[in-house]
Amino acid sequence: MERSLLPRHIGIIMDGNGRWAKKRLMPRTAGHVQGAKAFRKCLRHCADIGIECVTFYAFSTENWKRPDEEVGAIMKLFSEYLDEALGMDDKDIIMRFIGDRSRLSEKLREKMLRIEEDTAANINGTICCIAVNYGGRDDIVGAVQELIAEGYDWSDVTEDAISRHLDTRGLPDVDLIIRPSGEQRISNFLIWQAAYAEYVFMDVLWPDFTEKDLDFALEEYAKRNRRFGGV
Ligand code: FPP
Image (cartoon, rainbow, N blue to C red; front, top):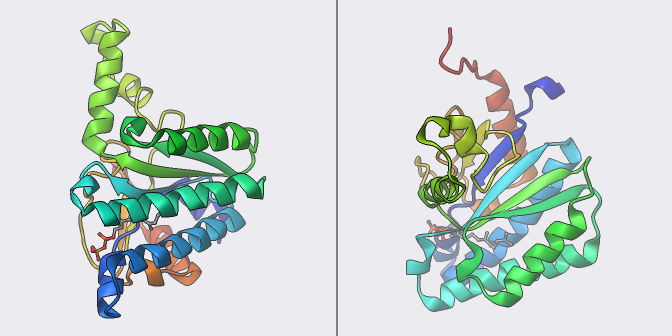
């Protein structure tokens, strides 16, 4: 596909893991295991086709309401991926994390920091941003708190100033949000950054999501006529 037709930043809501497992009479955690595999494939594909940035919604600020066992299983999968990525030394990928890290374990936080530092120099690579304990409203509140702490005058509180204080600072706004599993909502994901995003909702459950599904979403995006409020 022509480069100019590709989104610079894709946001992916990895939804449907629980339903995938339920359909197979398996525990919900089995859906997350399969979901983590789909994540790896999808990220690889993004890097192969040269997507500038892709953000995956792995755990929301609301997901703590789930049973401890499920939360633990998701954190374990995340931690395993970090170990794997730390060992891979993949020059095609820059890793970044968004969300409030204060509730994550010290060990996890250390790994996240290390991988961000280790991959920061891969400037020609795809930025893989993983949202963990992330909420769009929480992100905006955090940005406003920082502005106040930095002593911003009310008249300097502009859209640009807020953007520069969000967790996604430095990343382009989201062009395309993909949500599999048939749900059609944003669920507190990148709500500021997706102000002008295009949405592609798909019926496939996340664990079944393949490279072909991503290509389909990209083709769909390429057909959209983006006007950003103009004519
Ligand atoms: C939503 O599906 C999925 C999650 C809350 C967890 C996503 C986590 C992973 C894919 C694995 C860990 C991540 C990485 C980056 C290795 P759901 O459980 O809400 O599905 P349902 O709506 O069918 O119940």
